Image (cartoon, rainbow, N blue to C red; front, top):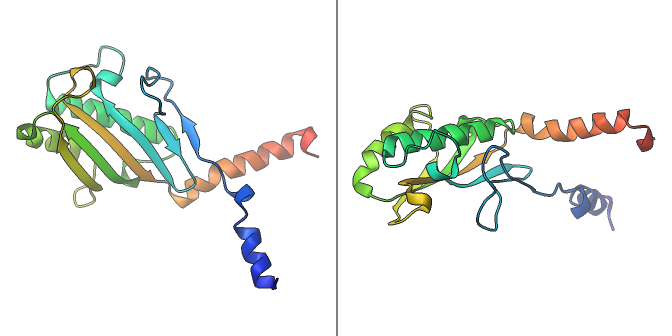
Length: 167
């Protein structure tokens, strides 16, 4: 084995790779499906589709496409913020709406959450029926910024330094 091979093996050892984290948002009810609200890996954050019906509390506004979209997008924004991401980090969105004739209402509300000319890639489809009678469901993929990706590893290292058992 050459030094280059050894260096490459040292860099790409599977045990060095961080495992994806599977998380549920504590402010949302547990998913009724076998899945997680968020999956976080070294580079990306994946959020499961959210509807207004998924969100507890008096905020539910089923029936108004624009308000449902705003409610879901505010929750997406908050969930991303909880792990150090922002809406500018979103790279891909899937939107399912029950009536494509209402796409303009959804688009107007959706656009409020992004800078003009910096919209993520997006697919929008008509789905005749969504969970709980909602009219919009939104799924998001965001890229974790490099400076924020390093933070959990740095915190773990700092925590190990304070732990007498790690000596």
